[in-house]
Image 1: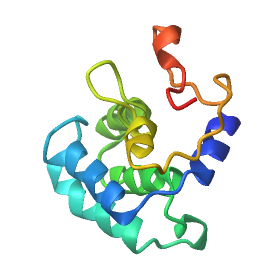
Image 2 (image 1 turned 180 degrees about the horizontal axis):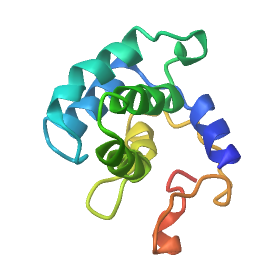
Image 3 (image 1 turned 120 degrees about the vertical axis):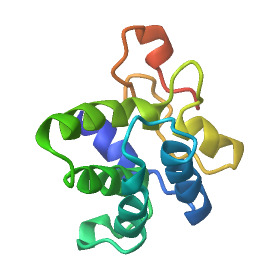
Length: 131
């Protein structure tokens, strides 16, 4: 978990990429989260309340999502938070965020497969795809 956080903290995003991720989550419905949270996620990412979330990284974007989820009741908050990592990492139907960054030449993840894994039943699919 620590290695994933460190990798996400080093993985810079353009504003356009962050907006696309938020759009996919809420408008395209790729994250089962209440759509009314889209504005909160956007505002928390682009105008963060805390200094450590100011860098434009996957980690800051993840924190914007989880901070917005605090508006929810405990059980829905837990459920959507549990799905967030998989959404950001991608699955067989949606390339992971880093794969998308690679298309734009922005991936900064380390190349070792063991550094960046997502929680998945199929660990072969869980490996980072950028190396």
